[in-house]
Amino acid sequence: MSIAHLADTGLPLNRKERFFTGTVLPMLVCADDFAHFGRLTELVGLGRVTVDARPDSANVQFFTEYGFAESLVGETTGRFPGAPTAKDTPDVLIYIAGPTRALLAIEAKMYDRPTTAELNEQLAAQAALVRYLAGRLDVDAARIAHVALLPAALAREIVALSVPTVTWEQIMETYADVAPRYFVEVLRVALARYERLVSPRRTSGANAEMKLAGAEIYERHRAGSLATPWMGRQGGLNGAELARDIASGTWRAQRYECSSKPVHNPNWFSVDEFVTRIAQTQPAP
Image 1 (cartoon, rainbow, N blue to C red):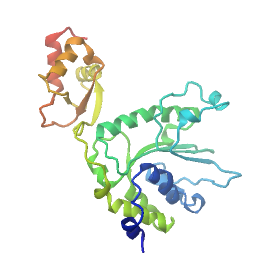
Image 2 (cartoon, one colour; image 1 turned 90 degrees about the vertical axis):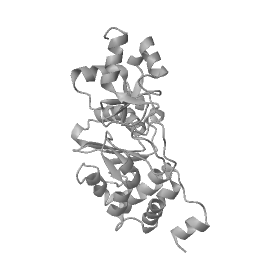
Image 3 (tube, rainbow, N blue to C red; image 1 turned 135 degrees about the vertical axis):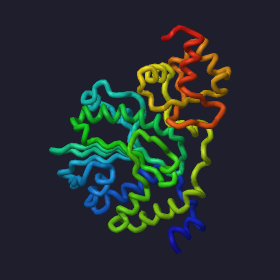
Image 4 (cartoon, rainbow, N blue to C red; image 1 turned 60 degrees about the vertical axis):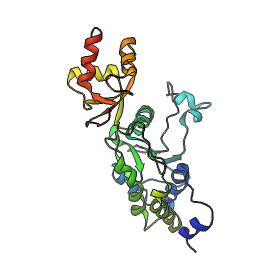
């Protein structure tokens, strides 16, 4: 038998993302009592970091499926005043103490298939917590790594991501010679069957690189600093939804899908047209 054979004849392969972040990833990167942990820190751009994982002298905290807000109880609340209350915590949070402190945040996907806009929105929400934690833990900005961990196939679909990307394939290759062979093979089989097990491609928001509020689009356009000159709204430039946004003034807070490249879709139009339409229908904000 083999792991691949068991996936066909035994229990179906686990598609849960938390299995890969909470079980498979630690088994690889923490192999041999963290002896090879520096390979991970190199992959995410922090350089090789050696950690002490001995219980009596440990300088590393390794948390998967971490809920920071839920963890603030008792005396810990005093150490983290004004902490963000949103539950936007990355899948993996790793804090390394000592003379050179570091903070590593990983948002991982396996068979989920978010659009670029959806993933960027999630990462942006997490970034506020990552910055806050780094500040409270006195981690220098150069020692913070916030990355997306994606299958290579998904990484090719995602464009203009706000953080660096590491692939599961890179993790597998980096740890193949030192990690438990069982879990290396579990990951290999999971990736080999990606196209069979991945969720269907989402159509809504598939063209977006990010979402911005109308007021931010307007101001950046006027300042010449807007990197996404194309935007979308259901019905397009002449649709009822955009007309309603502009007539009511809610366009300022409404978040619109944006792209740096032209989108050949009737729901999309240029920011130039958007700004002109606003000027035609109401005083400049």
